Figure 1 (cartoon, rainbow, N blue to C red):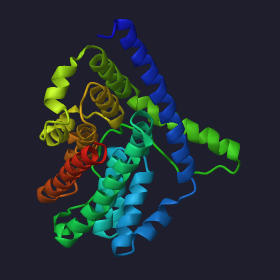
Figure 2: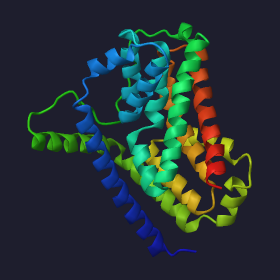
Figure 3: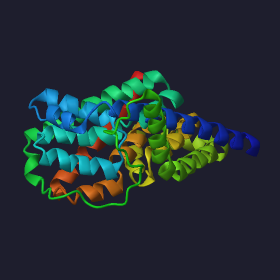
Length: 302
């Protein structure tokens, strides 16, 4: 059993690692977004066909939005005439392929695992949006305006681009810090819980409930992630600590997807712009993504 000192050491090291990763990844994304006008992206996404879904999922992966930004963007796309299916691909991909999630997974779980996660989540986002369009789910849209909600992440004005690169880099890190400040308490909570799991949760319990030998561990983890989720920055340290105790990689991935994609606050906001059948279908798509990805991880990495 690790000592209290080892548990504290785990907490400090993981916290520093996550803070550096968050700042660097957020700053890089801000620099990229300075060169992509939102109006240009809306115009490109207005094209029909599968390519529109791919572009929309790619834009969702590029933008580190939380629900308070993703939902208004979704409303803006629909009002601008972006195809319904492409908009759904963006809506699904945005929380699942958040660059912060990808960066944390690459560092804490490995680049191979992150790439597998990206391919699976990206594919499910593309075909999920395509499927929702094909079954005529657009009839359940009732968009009037974006639901009002207190913003839980930093405001980004990525279209503003200073002339000099030094000023751009400085602005990018300012925005990264603005994004980090509101989520810092949640990140610390996640690391603290992860450190407690790492130090004091008996390994036998984790192996029995969520080990690779339990075929129900993946869907259970996907459901557990919903109320557990505060932000991905909270869920990933907890998942990594559980994995070190014997939780299967697939269950950890299902936990992250379930939490990131089916967070209760985001689902409640979606009810302001979509009717219940469409929200239920979006939840079903994300749940299937979590379960399929979890089982695929266990198969690939066994």
